[in-house]
Length: 372
Image (cartoon, rainbow, N blue to C red; front, top):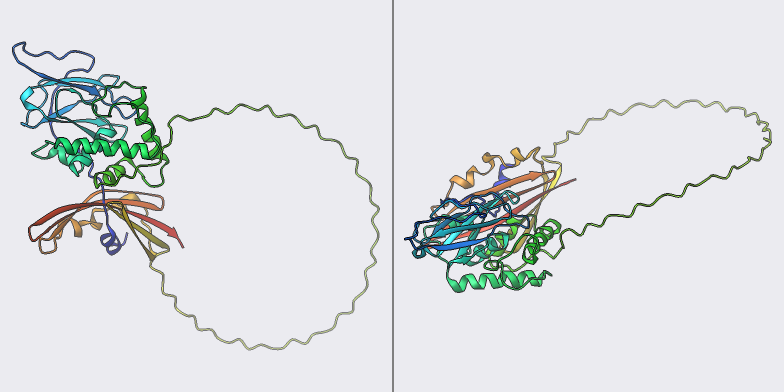
């Protein structure tokens, strides 16, 4: 893709990097064992995306830098149990979701039930105003109680406004099992994102929600597949038709005497070919940049379309932004890139530092190549 076009219009979103933490062990189906003389605080819950997150390590990172006292692994039903030192709370939690292809995060302020799901991940993003993996990697994982409660309230309100019916309790501390009402909310969220024209992925929803936008995909129920009733066709027996014979009427041709034509000589006019300047590209490029829920659309003409994702996402296209700063006032980070058919997406982050003011802006750019 043209370097100038790419660099000028590059945008961005989610940085899906797995954060590091203190891991430990204990299958959710068995009890953890500790020295009887050591007081511990128990954390337990369900890890799920609708389906159980099975046989995955749950990692804790507590406010004092410690983690679980023994290894913790989810069971086949997504259940897990772990212990930490009581003085270590609060703790950040993470587990890998192979379905979403990313880590999911949660937050335990006190001992007891703390689930890990796409909903808890959204609550962490809103409460910290950052991508959850960046929060987990930070030196201070503590979240203000009021900020976290407000984030959970914004999450449930947004779901209800979008048409979701929520059971009692909340997605963080309410115990649930696979197949019950809270689990069905996770199934319906996945179905709603897949059917949405506003959100192309769960990662895009996280980026929009953390910036304070309460827009969610419209509700679509999962599993509403209807099996059609087979219909036995009724055979049609054709009615034979007896053709009526037609007697042709003979046509007698009228003789025509041709008129001789004397050809007029034509002197050909030489034609000087006009050179044609080749068009630089055969596509119109529509670029949509989304920052904090606000979109800007720009259209360019005569742009060549990349032949593959590797060409679209080539590091050469973005090295100028990644390695260059404007007098130290800003830097760019390219987070993710994908391309398929006539459409590509680039997520990035601008880190701005001007006169002691520091901030980061996440945004997403969509490239749509329209054949001319």
